[in-house]
Length: 175
Image (cartoon, rainbow, N blue to C red; front, side, top):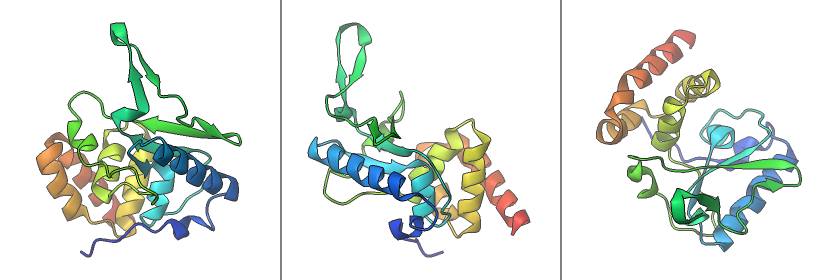
C-alpha cells in the first residue's frame, strides 16, 4: 500500500473555521516556543483521510513544553497555549516507557506537522475510548497503511498488534 501524506486541506469542509484557526495559532505558538509537536486527535484523523467534525485541537508535545519542579511537580511552560478564542488546545505527552514517541518528534518548525499514521494508530489503540477505536477503523477503511502500522508496533508496542488486527478486521467487515 502506498503511504499517504497527511493533507490538512481535507479538514476544510468538515471542521469549523474557528477550530482550524485555533489549530494554526496554537501550532505557531508552540513553534515560537521551540516545542516539538505533532497534530494528533480528530484533526490528524481528518488529515489522514477521514475528516470529521471536532471542537478541540490536540497536539502531542515534547518534554520542552513542561517545567519540572521539586517533588515531581510538572507544569506547563509559560506561553504554551491551552485555548485559542474559546477552542480548547490539549497536549498529550509521552508516558513512562514511551520514549520512542518523543525520539521521533520532528524539530519545531514553521510547518504544521501531522503525526505519522503509525503514531496516530498507536495513540488510538492505547486509548480506552470507543471513539478512538472507531477513528482507527475509519482510517483503515480510508486506506491507512496497516502493514506500516504493524511493523512500527512490532518494534515499539507489540502488545497492541492484536488490537490493530481486530480494527482491521472490523474495517474489512464494514467496507
